[in-house]
Length: 96
Image (cartoon, rainbow, N blue to C red):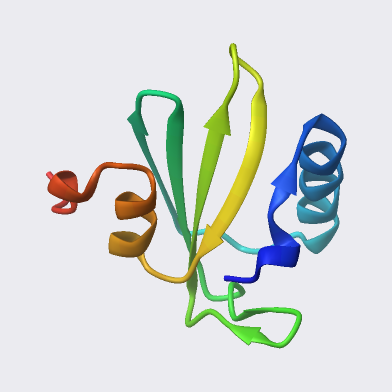
């Protein structure tokens, strides 16, 4: 969504997870899709309405890039297709 929100490295990833815990958002559904070194996490819920001034319409998708196991980077996306494409999973956009 915004380049300044991209997490680079362990400390930024940990800080992002801490912030997420503080938000206590209500989640109705989670989806995880893995493709090599990247994992897409989709979250849906009524309280996922915005991050700062960016509207989200009840869902957000994160692309986690792994480096030798740990998360090294997180990118945020509004839409599922956009996140799956960014993770190199564009052909796997339909839910099964």
